[in-house]
Length: 255
Image (cartoon, rainbow, N blue to C red; front, side, top):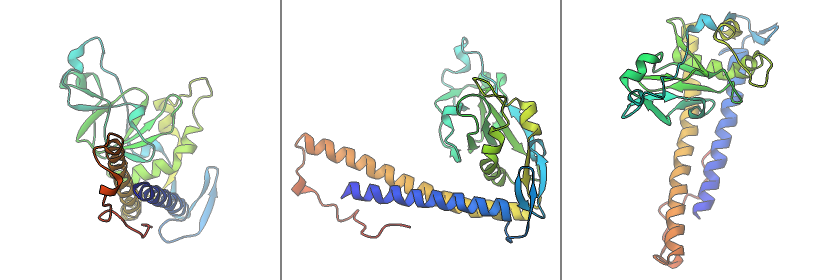
């Protein structure tokens, strides 16, 4: 029964992700009003939207790693230190493997909540994440966008997710692909500069993201429950006949 519920949550999450991708495709090529398109070298765009370099979105910051030889930069640190492995493409950055201290932060370049992080070096180049911590820092593989007052932070995040593949393809061809800060800043994307439109687009996509996260959390709870019950069954602590799963049974899949 629990496995069936897990499958339902997996399928519901997949459906929500597909909806998000389709919605982004429509919003970032047609706009909110499904307006006529005009063709550009980088793809179709709504007639009222503009081609702008990434630098127009805000301040671009390249991360820096505090010296690891001095453990005072890390020991008992509470400031999240973001590396590419901490970023799941297209999602908010919920946790980091490493933390730094105030001393370590002096060696880094602080970024704040609402910043969009873009991996610009290595095999995972093109991953996009969104900072939720009040303050944090990143390593040198990440370029971050601190939006200016012309661009809504959450809209900027979704915009960069949509353009991630285009941006990634501009990396220098080498064994280790690299997008330098200078090149990253110059890459052109298509965007609306209408703040009201940005806010509405961000709100629409954020609703879908909340649905995705809900299914993920429910699946995680069910996974944990399944592991606990399996362990107790294998050790003889409980028997199958003892189980009453009626409280968590839902015969109707969530769409």
